[in-house]
Image (cartoon, rainbow, N blue to C red):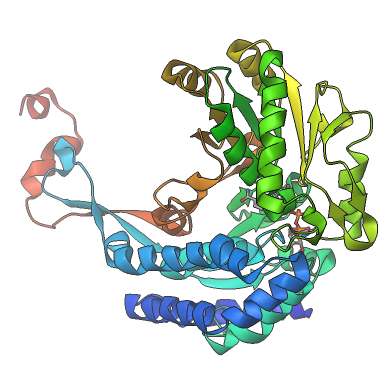
Amino acid sequence: MSQEQQVAERTRQAFLTGRTRPLKHRVSQLKALRRFIVEQQKDIAEALQKDLGKTEYGTQLYEMLGLEDEIKVALDHLAEWAAPRPVGKTLLTALDDVYIQPEPLGVVLIIGAWNYPWALTLQPLIGAIAAGNAVVVKPSEVCTHTAKVMEDLLPRYLDKELYPVVTGGASETQELLRQRFDHIFYTGSSAVGKLVMEAAARHLSPVTLELGGKSPCYVDKDCDLAVASRRITWGKFVNCGQTCIAPDYVLCEPGIQDRLLQEMRSCIKEFYTDDPKSFPDYGRIINQRHFQRVTALLEGSMVAIGGDSDESQCYIAPTVLRDVKPEAKVMQEEIFGPVLPILPVSGPDEAIRFINSREKPLVLYIFSSSNKVIKQMIAETSSGGVLANDCLVHYTVSALPFGGVGHSGMGRYHGKCTFDQLSNLRSCLIKTLSMEVVNKMRYPPHTAERLRW
Ligand code: NAD
């Protein structure tokens, strides 16, 4: 029996003891998870520094604060989320007790990605614990140091039989995927997402797939370009562009391209100085494979800002490309690095046509002062989420269901949505054995006399 099979079986046995069901247990585990985040912040930050060159401040801001907030939301609302939810009744059930009872699904497998390895692995874990599940946690092997800290330290805080951490790469993950789970929560590329869904189908396990893709950013000529540029520059280059919801490319009218470039150039200088390579707030590409992939995407396009790189440090400067053609190499796959192509379009109508001719993105960004343009773009396109006049911040609103559509994913999470996603929303109807007279009309024989009654 493989190690992965043993872990899956042990976790199921632990779930079957029933100890995840009482809310008291879930609350104590959520509090333990919060203690882990607070007490181990030094080790967590050091590991991320080694893996992605993130600063301690960046780790707090982009990973830990959101997790603490999510735990607080779960603790504040758990009793309400887990309570029976009464629903409207019909004439036939008017005297009955009719409600939805959320119950745990069972054993959930969480497969995390490397770019925000704590947020993307622990955020679904919070909802899974709140919903009363047992969870096998599989962090990304790409962030070696982070995976090690998670494997070594998390079991010191959580019930290790119910929430084991399994490390390893593709082959270990595939072995895990051969086991039966009651839900698989995957974050990563669309290509691996398909493998996960295929494996899940063998057991009829439901999946949540948090995938990527090219998130467009339309900049309308009717907008404050200085503010728009600041927000886009921040959203694109944070974590060195390795953010699933980073604006992938900009669409704008040719007449504003030069102004936009000028503003972005000054924002890059303001955020990362003239020398981003030596500036601690500017990160690195995760590894050489991704470094080579991202630098190869520059081929055939015109660099307007940045463009320099250093393979020995996996460094790629904040880079903006101008007058990019739809058929350019950089427009054929998700960039997932610090490269921002600008594609000229004639206005919102052409931008809409362009967006609709491609796979549905995880996010659509719209920068405009015109409410009419914003509403038109929302009405005539589709994406997992929409954000007007800012980048990334919709991710922090736990009341907004987060996720993709089509090739950018399926299923939603954050806040109550994770709880619901990882619960069986069981339909319950409880009737009394008395009052049989009310049911008379449904029993045969359906004589005319009975129908009159
Ligand atoms: P990754 O390489 O870390 O892979 C993710 C997980 O899949 C890892 O745990 C890994 O072990 C496993 N895996 C990799 N190859 C596998 C295989 N062949 N079989 C089984 N399991 C395998 O991360 P990645 O895929 O490079 O992540 C980047 C992608 O994830 C981007 O497309 C990005 O947009 C997307 N992403 C999406 C979200 C979101 O919330 N929607 C968040 C972050 C990243």
